[in-house]
Image 1 (cartoon, rainbow, N blue to C red):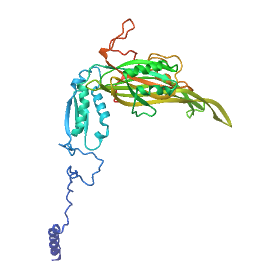
Image 2: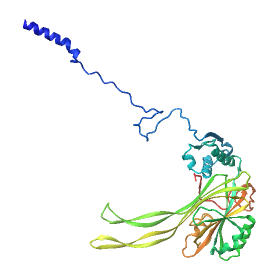
Image 3: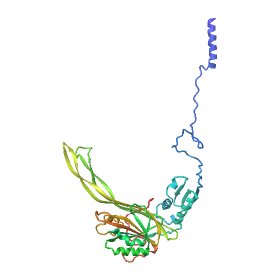
Image 4: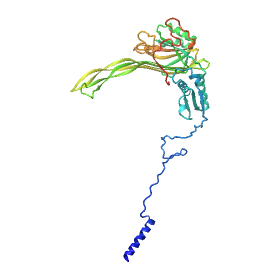
Length: 402
């Protein structure tokens, strides 16, 4: 009887175990989908630095911004040999409006290709952009010629006689003064300089510029010098190795002009950088050789003269722009009337730097000459080919952003 009772109890336990959860295996965990922040209400745990793709995004119009497309083909089609001619339009718009308006509130967009300029901004900004755009597509299409002269005067007292011939205009570069004068007064001014024994005209050149395009002229040469002696860690002999360095000496000139529609005034962007090695100063040093021994050697410390000019001027085309670069080092040696000299020259600019001691007032004369088709081409076997400047431009010519 006891065995029968044990069997009955075992059967009863087997039947009751599922009700109390015994003998059951845990179900497979349910996979949870990844949490994707909502575009309308981002998750608080989402990092603010993470980019988010937004579909069907609408540009904000909180300031009444407008999307306007401008046709650039009337301008760019005339510049077949210029790479990315539309960049000049972008550059001049930024010069006129500044950069902050495109990278701060309200949201703005400025982009262009060879066919279309696309602008998204307020109505007032669109008006300013349209004014620059009109000067490109409806302005002059042939190159405009600008005459540049470089003069030096030993005594800055020339201003006392010339002050009545010109009026001062603002300039941003330190040490640079600017004046405007009618071309008639300019002729009188040059006549006054010719009467002075301390005045010299170093160079005169005529540069043709396409409307709005940036022309970059650059002539540099490398100057090597012995910078230091470095300890030789690869082998014990020689204990020191001479280390040379290189300085790029010469000039970089960027110039761009944008004519107004009536042709009576023009904007000119002029940027000039000059670096000249005035001398290499010898310095004697003693290299420790061990056991209280030294070896005397000589290194060189460069003495540099640099000059920077970055200006934008707007003036009537019937007037002359005169810039004084300040009292700088006087020229030395014969005047080189080309861009090829050794060292190379541009308008004699590098010749105002190399000598020490004497100082002169350096003047830059800029005059609008008119379209290239109106220029009188000299005759003879040495006459320049039509469409070229009167001085050879052998430097690297390219077009960049600024």
